[in-house]
Every structure is written in structure tokens, then in C-alpha cells.
Amino acid sequence: MTRKVAALTAVAAVLLVAGCSESSPGRAAPISQPSGAVHPPGSAEPSSPQSSASALPYSGAPAVNDPLPESVVSGDPCEALTRQQIEQALGENAPEGTPKETEAGPGCNWQDSQSGAGFTVFFSNVTGQGLSAYYANTQPQVKVWRELPPIEGFPAVAYKTADDDLICSVAVGLADEFAVDVVGGLGRAADNQVDPCDAMQALAALVVQNLRQKAGR
View (cartoon, helix red, strand yellow):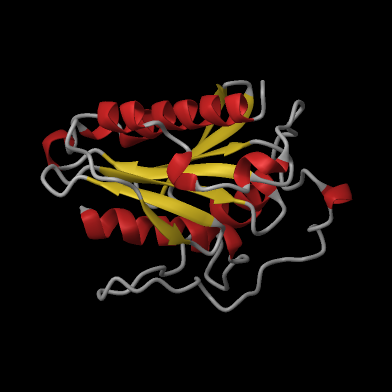
């Protein structure tokens, strides 16, 4: 599960920044190799005509009516959750977060080696297109795509690469230009018993609460 969370985090970032693939409509292009390496699907480049702020939102993405300042995603993602919140998610022996870079922005990974449970929080601020990039680039390539009720007042989506995937991603638009994404799974003990998207949605709510407090909201 440790490698799966790390690989799926990379997949989430690749799906976000990669443009539409050359595969047949409605089918996801290959996104990973047996070795764990992840490559952008197809050979298309990220679309650029809609990258300006004046074009946001697009591709059906909802507007963020009361955005947070960009400063909330300019810090360390390892500080996106408190120690108490991490222990609530992974237990009192939860490890410290490990910084990592994704194609979508800086991230931090927490992984319980015993249970296999783990998650990554990353700030999706590279594209400058917020949830619009998810709607344009990620939605066409994943099997499961759910528009969620607002999380702490912000639009959100959950997505998985397959129906039976034990890893889920929840992206929350904090402004039209940037988002925060929580990717993870519940580990071996909870496999097939709890929807990982429900757990990631709860974690995403905690992250957004903390970012709102950081912005003085």
C-alpha cells in the first residue's frame, strides 16, 4: 500500500497536468508501468488557451465564490494537518510527514508501514487553473468522478482510476486558480469495507479548515 499511495499521488498529479490523450473517447490511457514509474498518458501537451485568469473557470468547473488567498498554498504541505489530526487518521504511532514534489505542486506524504494506510496532501498550484484543470484533464481519464457537496464552502470532487481502486483523491478548489488535493487509502484492515473517498473527504475538510484559519477566516 505504501508504494500504491506514492504511485497514485504521482498519477493524480500527472492526470491533472496532462492534456487529453490520444486514446479512444471514454477510455483512460495507460498511466503506470509495472515498475511503478508513472508517465503522462498519451503525448498531448497541457492545453494553454484557457490558462489565463480571465478564462476561469472552464470545462464545467464551478466558480469559487469566496476564494482564499494564494498564500495558503505557498507554505509547507506537511503543516496542512496538525499532529493530533494525523494521529486521529493513522494512530498515535503515525510517522512524520515526508515532503515530496508532484507535477501539480508541492506535497507531503504520511504512511503507516504496519497497516498500509496513508495519504498525501498536495497543493495544486502549478497549472494556475484550479479545479478547471481537473475537469478538463482528469475527468476524461478516470473511471470514477464524483462532484461532492461543498467542503467548508468550497467546491470539491472525488475521483478514482477504477471502480475497485482502494485509493481515492479528493480535490477542493480554494480559488479559481488553485486547489488542494488529498490522495490516499485506508490500508489492509479496511480494504473493501469503507469507501476511501469518504475518508479522504473527511481529511480534506480538516485540511481546508486549517487553511482557512491560516488565512484568518
